[in-house]
Amino acid sequence: MEWIFVSLASLLAGFVDAIVGGGGLIMVPALFATFASAPPATLLGTNKSASVWGTAMATWQYSRRVQMPWHAMMPAAAAGFCGSFVGAWAVTVVSPDFLRKLLPVILVAVLAYTLAKKELGRHHQPRFAGRAEVAMASLIGVAIGFYDGFFGPGTGSFFVFAFVRLLGYDFLNASVSAKLLNLATNVAALVLFTAKGHVWWHFALPLAVANVAGSMLGTHMALRHGTGFVRAIFIFVVSMLILKTGYDAFLR
Image 1: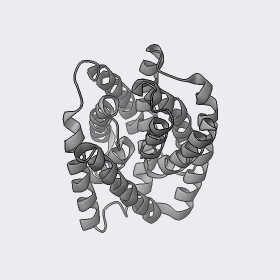
Image 2 (image 1 turned 180 degrees about the vertical axis):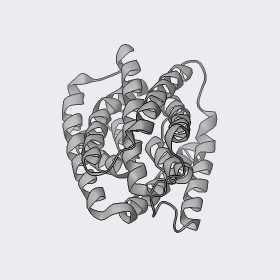
Image 3 (image 1 turned 120 degrees about the horizontal axis):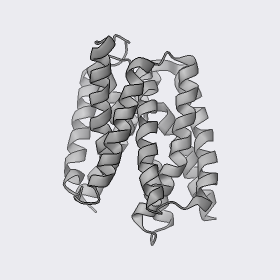
Image 4 (image 1 turned 45 degrees about the vertical axis):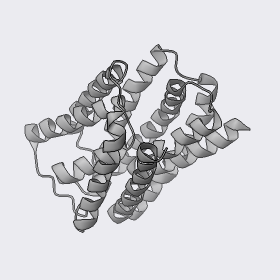
């Protein structure tokens, strides 16, 4: 019965992740609740083994319908991969516990800024072009990629917010670009987890199938309803992340 519950969680996680990121908010607690005695690294690795496929599907679907700035995002994805790998290595030598209490504060600031700036992310007006766009996107990739490997919660949402605030993208285009970078950081983490033997491959297939199905539905909804819909889901996911990370940091 466990695989049915976690597969349903993976379906919902793929749906949310495809729109704006934050699928780990659903999938990781479901795995920890179902397999409470399992090593955390194994559950995190198993989550990555499923989510990477949903993210790949979302990236492919989006790229067919929305113009991806490949010239900037491919170098940024490479930077994100390297940052995530270094972050995953860093967490083996430095504890990320100091981030637990800082993260809810950062997320509250992100939410407050998004709500205060009503027009934020409603119009696609890129601020950079050429090498400047490549450089800024790569800085975002390596910084948030490192965070993803080192700690992780809210990575997709941080990518979306950074592309909206720093690059001038609207929420839909930011979500499209975030998928490619999130795919790169997920692959980096999965490589490390696999090398360390922290993946339950017997769960990987059903979780991946469910995640891809949810991703396809989420991508369809985002493309159909556009930027306003993605912005609303972003606000909802960040709000849920604040509650979850705040509880983990101060009440648990």
